[in-house]
Amino acid sequence: MTGRMRIAIDGPAAAGKSTIAKLVAKKLGFTYIDTGAMYRAITYKVLQHAVDLHDEEAIAKLIEKTDIELHPSEHAQQVILDGVEVTDVIRSHEVTSTVSAIAALTSVRKLLVAKQQGLAAHSSVVMDGRDIGTAVLPDAELKVFMTASVEERAQRRFLEEQSRGITTDYETLKREISERDLADSEREISPLKKAEDAIILDTTGKTIEEVTSSIVKYAEERYPR
Ligand code: C5P
Image (cartoon, rainbow, N blue to C red; front, side, top):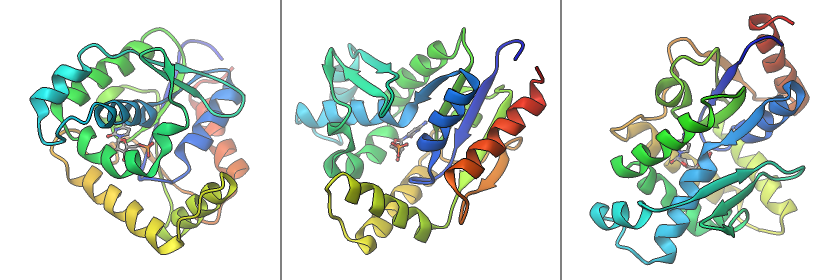
C-alpha cells in the first residue's frame, strides 16, 4: 500500500471489534491499538488505589502520571501499566463493570484521547473503540461501525469466557453488555455513536474470516497498491 492509512473501528461492547481489528492489522501490516484496554487499565489503577469513583478530582490527580504501553504479541496484545503487566487483570468482572463510569470522566478522556492520537500520528493503524471515528481520528481514511445482535454478542462473550475457564451465565452477560452499551451511548462526552461517514458492518451470523476480509477489501479499495 502507498501512503499512511488509519482505520477506525467503533461499535458496542462485544461486537468482535478487537478480534477483527487485530486480524485486519496483521493482514495489512498495520499497528493495532486497543483503546478499550487503555480505559480498562486506568479503571484498574483507580480500583487498586481505592479512590472514590465519584471524586473526579482525586481520580484526575491519580492518573496524571500514568504510563500505559501496548505491546503487540501473537495471542493478546500485552498491556503494561506503570511498568507492570496487566493484560489479564483488566478483563476482570470488577473492571468491566466499572469502566464505563470512569470512561465518562472528562479528565480520563482528555488524557487517553491525546495518547491515542499520539500513537496514530506517524504510522498506519487499526484502532478500535467507541469514539475513534467521531473524536480520536475524525479524519481516518476508513471508518467502520461494527454491530451484532445483543444475543449473538452475549453468546460470543459466553464462549470466550468459557474458554478462559470463567463461568458467567448467558443472561447475566446479556444484561451487562446492554447496560454498558447504554452507559457508553448516553454519556455526555464522545458517546458511542456511528460517525456520519462510517460503513455499518453487521456481523450477526458472519464468521471472523468474512468480516476481516470485507474490511481488508474496503481498505484496499481506498488505498490501492
Ligand atoms: O472495548 P472494551 O469493551 O474493552 O472497552 C471497555 C470500555 O472502555 C467501554 O465499555 C467504554 O466505556 C470505554 N471505551 C471508551 N472509548 C473507547 C474505548 C473504550 O469510552 N474509545
